[in-house]
Structure formats: C-alpha cells, structure tokens
Length: 388
Image (tube, rainbow, N blue to C red):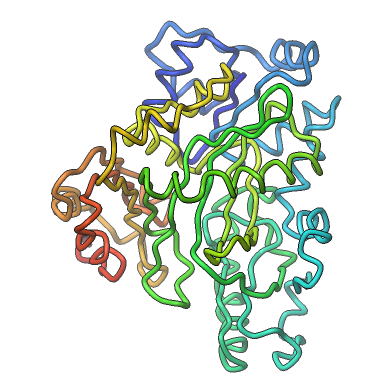
C-alpha cells in the first residue's frame, strides 16, 4: 500500500506503483502524480478497509506529510504510536536511553530557549526541533556565544519555516538540546521484514563543509561504505526494531560512528526511506529498487553487488537556496549551469523553488579516487544559478 504526499514523487516510485498495482490512496497528490495513466486509485474508505484486514502489511509513504492522515484514519492498530515514537526525538531518546545511559538530552519549549544558561550545556551540542525535517531549525553549538546566536537565529527562522510542512512533520513549539555525537555521519535506508528482521537497502555517507555545517547538501554511497558499515548498522537496527516491535516497517536512520564500534543514533525517520525520493540513488548506484524491495521482501545481495561497483562513488547534491534570498524574486534557474558541475550526471530533478528553499536535486557518479567535484559543491554559492 502507498500514500503519496508532497514534496516530491519520483518517476521511479511512480513506475513501481504502476508495476506492482498495490493500493494507492486517492488524494490530491496521487491524482496529480498518476494523471494521464490507467492506474486506479483507492478511495479512502476502501483503503482503510483494506489496511484493517491486515495491520502488518507493507505500507509506504514517500513523505512524512502523510502522518496526519495516518493518525486520523489508520489508528485501529499500533502504527500511529510507532510513528510518533520515532518522529518525536524526545520519545526516541527515551526508547534508547538504556543503550546510551550517559547521553545528555533535554526538551525545551520554544519560548523558553532564551532562559537556558549555556554554561549548563555540554558544549559542543546541537539544538533542533523535537519534531523536525530537512535540517530546518537545526543549529550546532560550539561555544557560549554560539548558543546565544543560535537562539536568536531560531527565533527569527521560526515564522519563515513553520509554513513549509505540516505540524506533525515540523513542530516548532518544542526543541531538543542534545550533546554532539562524534564521528562520521551516515544515513541508512532499511526496512523490517514480516518477521521483524532489518534489511539494509542503502548506506549514505553525509559530507560536510565544516565542523559546524548541519546542511543536507551532499550524500554519497559506494560499495566501500556498504562493506565497511553494513554489519554494525544491521546490529543497531536489530536492537531498535526489537525495542519498538517493528515488522513490515520502512525507516531512514541517521547514525554517527567513531570507527571503533561505537555508534550514536541521531534520529530515525519512520514510514519512508531518504526523503524527497532521494532513496532512488540506490537504483542508480546498484540497480536496487527500494520500494519494490520493501513491498516484496527482497533482500539485496551485497556480496554480488560489491563486485560490480568498485572504484565508483554515487552522490546526491541538493541545490539549496540561501535563507537570505527572497524566492519570490527568482525568475528562473540556470539548471544547465548547475548540471555542468558534474562530469557524469545521472539525473537532475527540477524543484519548485517558489514553494521550497530548493531548486534542484542531482544524482551523479564520480571516481572514488577523485572527489574534487563534490568537495567544490560543499563550499559553492548556488545563488549564481538563480536569475532575479
């Protein structure tokens, strides 16, 4: 079963739904996405009835914007509680507290942020919405002065970012302050099968421009990354799945590892793989269709895949728009110029920059021994591709 919502539905997801012919909820996004096709959408009443007959069947949404509908209509089982368990970072921290007994975290009301004494915080630390998405409202704190600046920035950002997503996707009334998790950062697309066993679909390395960078500008995947981290991440997923009693459940989890077997979970995003259908990078890199894997219980043969992609890195870069830019003044985007940064682009996705602070997503292949293209992107000013 599928529930489609904004912000983006990819061609791969569209083609997969058409191929599998699983029920797709009839809503505005689904009608727009599947217009001019013969695909028959399932009305809400029939969709709810079909779900009620088997509460453990695979259900996938491309976006957490669907959480509100699930809360209101699929509440006959335990699904809404499990979604909230992960979506609310404070609840998730409570779930894994015994795994990380010394980890500092604290939930604070938005209006109380400026009453917090920075001297009492475990600096460096990070502050972010308890229910958040896409690095919105996230700030790294590396000093007492940095805390004061972050609070001021959050206070000025809230009114601008609040309208972008539904409240259950981005909730700005409560923030969580937590200590920094040291090490390399990775994002893992995975699902739990019918017996509750985790299956990893892809592992993405998160590249940063600097120590205080919290943006989602660039992620990479390679068989080197998969081979190095697959087993330790799988063990972590097994423990989380056991605690939350997960079956037929897709997740996107962000993790840091110090390379010595110590893992720290940043957050877990329920009901989906990488947002904005960025999970499709697994298809370009390894021929893995994430949606089909989840729906049909397919497990990637990583041993076989590793022999085909050595020496290659597959990247996703977001053409983000600086918050200082007035998007209403943008008249067009130089997509060809943006695409020209990559010697082997795989797909360019044009995004409605009037609605979101992003003008494009691009997938590209680079040689593992030459990452200069991606390093340049980390520090690039994308404003030059915007016409006003």
